[in-house]
Image (cartoon, rainbow, N blue to C red):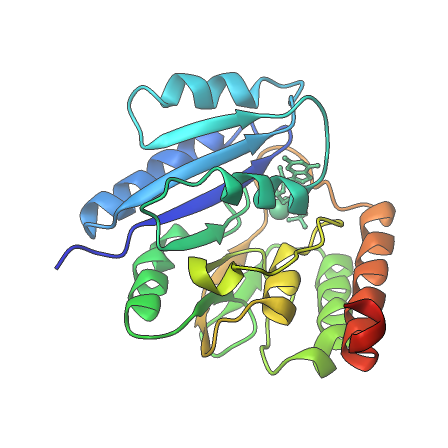
Amino acid sequence: MASLPFSIVIPTYNEAGGIERLLRAIDSVCKEHHLDVEMIVVDDNSPDGTGAIVDRLAAELPVRCIHRPGKLGLSSGVIEGWKAARPESKALGAMDGDFSHDVAILPRMVAALESGYGLAIGSRYVAGGGITNWPMRRIVTSRVACALARPLTKIKDITSGYFLVRREALEHVRLDPIGFKIGLEVIAKAHYGKATEIPYVFTDRVAGQSKLNNREILNYLKQLRKLYAARLFPARTA
Ligand SMILES: Nc1nc2c(ncn2[C@@H]2O[C@H](COP(=O)(O)OP(=O)(O)O)[C@@H](O)[C@H]2O)c(=O)[nH]1
Ligand SMILES: [Mg+2]
């Protein structure tokens, strides 16, 4: 049986140092496991030329690049990529462009959707998952970010940016493009039924720099405030 076609969106801003290696790694895992993938890079006119690298690779890999005029944010990039996904994709996903997310679990994520889960999340916080070489400050920030969202869901890696969701789960769902945490929007709002967390070990980037700054942390708090308001006062926020 042919595997479930999916589109995975990779938002990028200055990822020239690692994007080619990542796209080739996704391609080779998908070929090895006969996965039907479309990769969509949404690049915000990265000054380091990330977009041009992806355009060149489009001639040989199942990837295309959506070019936006300037830095418009991670979540809005993922949402824009999903809107452009080919019609045959039955699932949509997101992954960072810095190789922090382990491509080796993609076959398990696809298999989970094929077996009836609506959402498959790459997870650092279930047995078998973990984090290597992240500074303590980042580990604490991530744990606090997850703890703040804990009442919204049973999912452990609430702030994961690595997931696949069934396309129909997003129909008629209004996702807020604010900030960094598109996964949390999906977890809190999409109609995915059963979700599963698939462990992987997060590895910090070896090329380029993190774009998580204080403004994004503030955006996360605003996002949480909106999600809690929608839970507590659904009529007012509908
Ligand atoms: N298109 C786009 N991508 C972004 C933006 N901000 C971050 N990214 C990408 O989102 C992914 C995660 O960002 P990163 O800096 O690695 O965050 P961290 O892992 O939390 O430190 C990377 O692929 C970034 O290049 C943005 O404003 N626009
Ligand atoms: Mg990163």
